Length: 281
Image 1 (cartoon, helix red, strand yellow):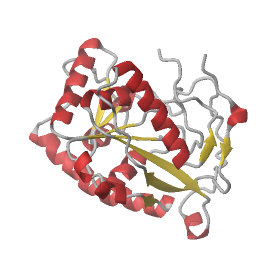
Image 2: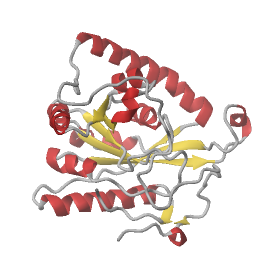
Image 3: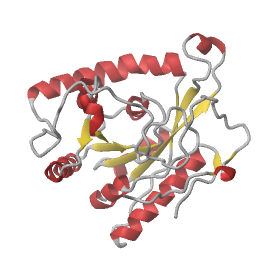
């Protein structure tokens, strides 16, 4: 039985942990801490356009990805969070390996982390997201950024999988937050769901680990955010490659454990209180 082990949390010297005052759960790593107001009643069944190829979608996608993400939210990340990007040389080093598709994974720690990753990579992304987000006020932004709702309906799940099969066939880049839930500025790394690693094995694509870590808010940045909100640094790590000759189940678990360990290391975590895998439903 997996369990949270608070005494095992050890960090490298100098690693900053923000004091957020948030009461994070210790018994359920996938518990949502953000409650979304339901404003619409979209059904995510086999009739939902998981991959929209309409002209209207493409035009609005351009607005979001080239104006909102790379201008408005880029300035927001720089001004409010003092965002720094590290490891961009990895993209050039592995350009050949990434050209046919890529699975990107990251810790999930603040509302604009998907936009920050898009900015760091200079590449459009497709992102599986909790369906409940799409019935809230951010529907338009999430959909046209590249978000695709994860359905709980069997017919919808079939169409969802077909959409990502097509994205992979088009050599698209996929971003998954395997922690599943966004816990604001949480430092330990929560357990990973296996979906991202199952997809990487299926599509035979590299996994690119990303870590978002924290710095103390001080200086001029004190004017642009709350004291408890940290400044941020995004680091791109060395890719992890699936071995298609190994059995799926064991290889997916290896990818999950190795990816979890790699992101812990990138974040200066020597011992993490959560295990890499949690009991799946």
